[in-house]
Image (tube, rainbow, N blue to C red; front, side):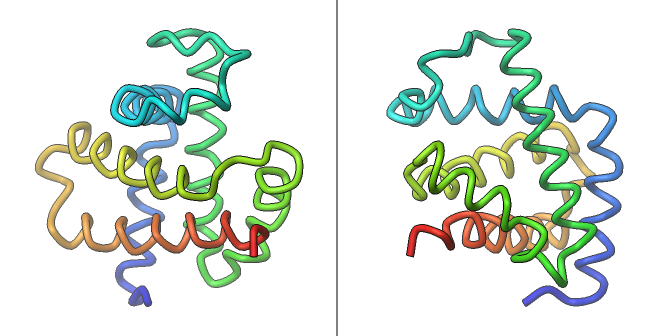
Length: 141
């Protein structure tokens, strides 16, 4: 799946993104809500306006989970098991939304990282986000 170099690159990227986790995450969420309006149904109880306190908070949680997943890529299923159970059994999120959010995260990173988002970084991040989305959707099977 991911080479050793790609795994190391992912950790470096998410380490760099951690200080602006709330911005990255909330921007990706906003992109998802705008591009795929049906995803908003799960957030009807939250203020999903740009840069709202709730969007920033949830965005930060997402990026922290991604960072944790990147650091523990070899045990991704175990690392994300509680998050997968929570989204499947309590929140009952449509698992197709994980792929949509992954796409929006890729776009957000490309916009934010500019020249640092090389084709190699893009490929590694795409593989990682696909694996992340698959693990989150695991409990639905």
